[in-house]
Length: 455
Image 1 (tube, rainbow, N blue to C red):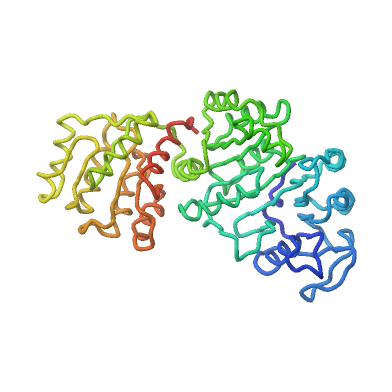
Image 2: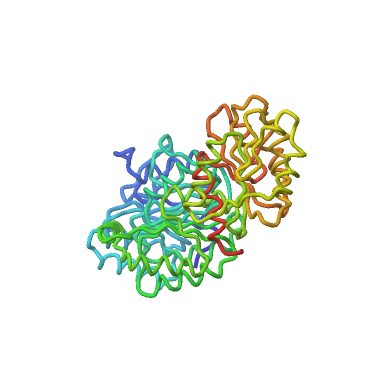
């Protein structure tokens, strides 16, 4: 049902553009795309008129040429007629951002809308949603541009029942440096649902990781989704709401979803190697980690640091999550020590964590990581890189990252995310090594690879 034009439309109709309310959602959508995106946009309102020196068409059927996507932002009772018109006019898909359907008790109206779209095999997103964001192509979110925070282009696609959660995740992605390919808010998901989008993104050449925020499923829908996710050739991450009795009630009033038995759902995800993010923070770390490494790892972690305190915190955090930080044998310790610079050689602690001390240089971090990456008893390396150490340079991230090009042991890093340290962070990220803003975030990145099945 879904086609690439949904995310890369060349033409778009925005239905509901107002001449009296510049902050109307339809106006926000129209303005964003008219001024900033490579899509030809047509305004529609039954009253007609002129907007930005462009004609406002009184109906979709008046617009000359083919329309790839219609964004519908009119009162709920008028939506079925607009969708009818879209179908009859050959529009290829629609995103209905209007609310007032099943989420507010008006199930009959939503069922009438869906019946029309289903009979015509017409892809309909929503209702009660923000719609579609595709990096560099289109943005149907009715949020003013000056308030939007958009991540850089990247490999992660997000599907969310909640527009608010979706936008919040985009803010976190930006702050963490996680790249985004596409984002879609499906709201009441009356017709187009998670499984449809899973199949689309599995074949999407821009997307490497698929993340979902899910509130609930219809009867049998959850089983079908899990089966499809288990067969997906890309990592799939799921964050579920409605885990408690009160949460179940909340999702029902938000998108009219049935939350289902969370414990059963969570168990099934685990059995199928589908990564569940417990909360939004796990979601961010998991997305960054799995967009860099599409592989499953074991639980054995080596930690390299220049601060004993950071190392101790990382060990505790690893073990709290079931990861193992094995002590290195004498031979391994000697091999690493031999390659360290003279000023560090006699004072570094060679257990695990490896504490290179505040006298460490770039060469010391590289030497420790290189030796660890050759060992068969280490599955992943966490680098706790403290940029304020005097002898560390801004090239250290790029130099360490060279070790994992190809099939090297995965490395994840912790670097405080402030502007002053950006060159070190970019050195890692430009070489596809994930970097967290916190020690716990770095541990979560390892946890994501441990939970993920081999893709």
